[in-house]
Image (cartoon, rainbow, N blue to C red; front, top):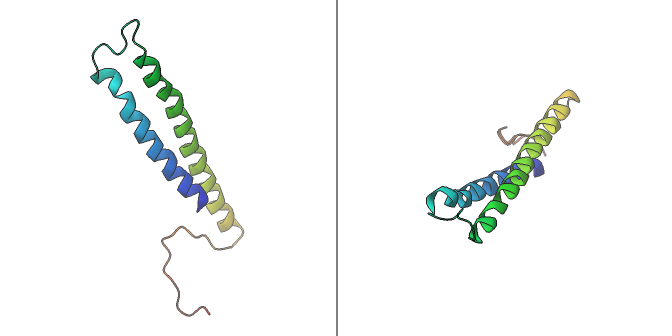
Length: 88
């Protein structure tokens, strides 16, 4: 469950950094020599890589914990199972 939340946060961050990187193509003169704004926007390339890394490793961790629980015969809770009312 924690890995799925981290994956979601990584995907949200990815969307945020892709949005800010779109300013590179939509803002005229941003990459012109002497413009300090380019460095501010280009740092988002590094942050985009970190966000993709978080999303990817969290997805792998969620998949590994699900398959490990299934291999051990334990509950494999993915959030799609019906709630049983006969358990007390």
